[in-house]
Length: 238
Image 1 (tube, rainbow, N blue to C red):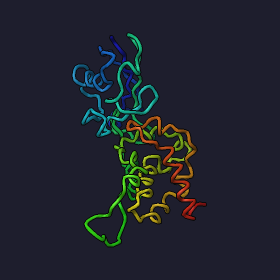
Image 2: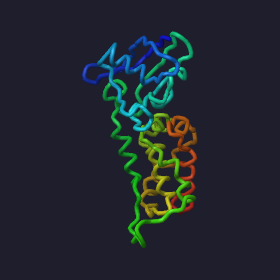
Image 3: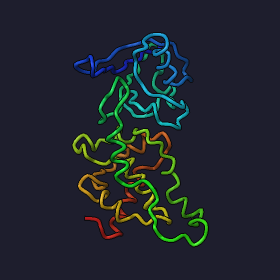
Image 4: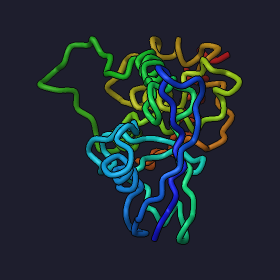
């Protein structure tokens, strides 16, 4: 069937403002939206800018807004966004991040907020043997958060930055939880300084948009609420 891709275009070097451009593409229902975008790039308009890499939902490169929902083009099937011949699929860049060109955004701010929660194991205690032992049960407490691919879909899906642009965002908080819940980690104090700041975890209002957008099925909203409780139990909550 034929679908119409209505893609937001913008080149800051030549355009005064973003605009939409339409392309008609022949696509099978079980093909990926990424395949349709590649058809445009290869055969219709080589100037179209978007990121891609593994094309299998592992690298997170091709995160974008598809019909108003955030996700990966490589994990979105045509039949999920276009039901019949001639349907239009609107494709836009992620929100809150500066557009570098078309669907390519500058992720510097996203990664800066992510790094602020110190996403690494903190423990200066001497290791008794060769490694710090952890039980399977202890690992399961944060297992899903280790699947994060930093695609920023949850960040774009979150409605909080509309009014609070400095909010650290769901990805950063979920990764903070990953280490706060790790029995081997001792970095609670350092992370809680960021999490308990005015732009930290308390701004979350449980919209669940981050959880719905996550292509790796991470229970982000649940992890955010658990982080709130951990801060409160630690005595650093306001």
